[in-house]
Length: 371
Image (cartoon, rainbow, N blue to C red; front, top):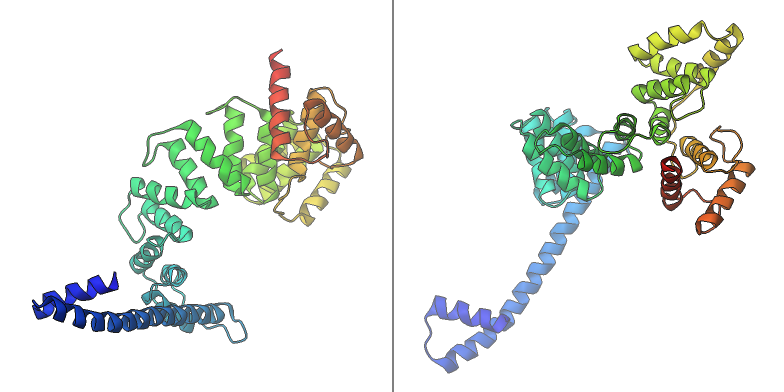
């Protein structure tokens, strides 16, 4: 291939007509071309190494690793690496311009660098480009373009993009409305512990939008979002306990979650909390208020988090097993009941709360209700 390239270059540039002469010179040119290509590869590798070094130096200044934190120097190094094509540096330079860190705030320039990184498949850049188009910040407001960018990032597993894609399908902004597609993308984001996605996914099962109503399954997702501190989910969890929707009726737990939501500014929660307050003894209110004051958000990750175990306990009860009280604690009785269910269902009887187990519990609940 290199000899053919050398031949072509020589014929075109020198106009040589003697075949033997062309062949001899081409052989020499091919040798020189090998050297040139080798040098080119070496130069490209060295340029890539320099770009990576500049990017990492920028990170060190940005994070204050072994040196004083310096946003201006970080941005300078990101500019150097970004200009050389480093996608991560392009993304971080875009963030620098977006937030005005180390450089003058310039949302248009931020979008320019996000585009450069997105062209290289950088999912975070694709997502932020989607947000920019969704909101019309730094670029023209364009819901269809936003959806395109969200879809790119969502396909790479970006939870925020999956959430916004679900919102787009649910609202019909930038794409034809599709409740089933909305539910699919919200579920994927919810599975990655995205609290807003968990809330909207739960709402679909509360209202029966795009799926059948299932208050117990909704309560699981409200619970996961509530434990992360999402006020609206805390309100819905409190409401579920107060009304016995998908959860055993428990006014003390209802008061607890409504208190947390009210503290975070949810007006509906504040109204319901006041209504519920008079129905509880003073010592119960004091106990709940003390717990609420000490409460801190948690990620609630893992298969045996409280909201998931509560759902498992409810489901097991409904299909004829005894997991003990519905308290969200994965104790010995719950495990024994789950193992018995797994044996009956022909699943591995290991007591694990897996996606397969949850799906089978939901299916058996639905079958029990239909009979």
